[in-house]
Amino acid sequence: MRKKVIAGNWKMNKLPNETISFFEEFAPLVKDTKNEVVICAPYTDLFYAILSAQNTNIKIGAQNMHWEENGAYTGEVSPQMLKSIGVEYVVLGHSERRQYFAETDETVNKKVKAAHNVGLKPIVCVGESLEQRESGKAKEIVTNQVKLGLKDLTNDQITSTIVAYEPIWAIGTGKTATKEDANETIKWIREELVNMYGKENADKVIIQYGGSVKSGNAKELFEMSDIDGGLVGGASLKPDEFAKIVNAV
Ligand code: PGA
Image 1 (spheres, rainbow, N blue to C red):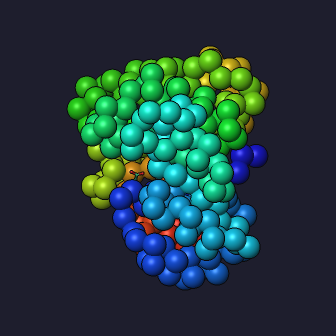
Image 2: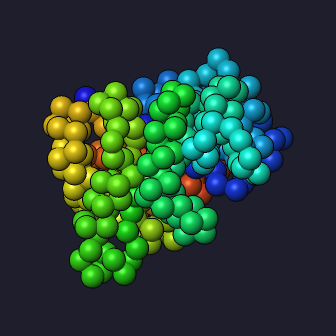
Image 3: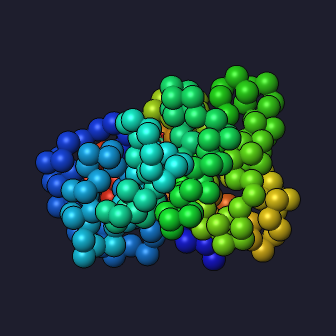
């Protein structure tokens, strides 16, 4: 049985004081869950989030990183820097980074390997646009992102990678993929992982759904056979709403 991992992606939101008050309210609400709970905070909040999450079941993630260990990369943050303060997860290849910051499958692949090299667990986002879905290209697009973004990993690396299927048209729009479509696309992703790494490894990979997950639809999505939890944007900013999502299953 794969564990459900419910991760909040705060994007570019919350100041340190807001981070601290979020955890004060949120931590008691999710203390009894068997799901893995992750908050992916902006860099400037990470240290506060880590301190606030001490002695709780909440894990902390970043939202991006560079693939190099160090060097002349002004403005960038390395995998080791994240690891050194206690970060455990990192979101890679989010569609907003692909769209606004020129992230490609090739840079995603470098980052996935770099994350594993220091023991960070990557949450790798894939997903198609509305135009691609409507023209019947979703399967090709998504499996290609998996093929390129997750290539050349060891068995240990692939089985500790999380994939987040996030249809771009469902992100922040209030439109959610139907649970059947989300489940089917996730099956395509797993089939591709079977081709790449064999069934035994592919069956261990946690694949989340993301895109307008909220307390009202979390249960039906997370109960689907192949959906192993969610990556939650807007609804993860409110402690009570995000706790309802975590506790939905
Ligand atoms: P949303 O964002 O839940 O606000 O749609 C999801 C994401 O971008 O990870």
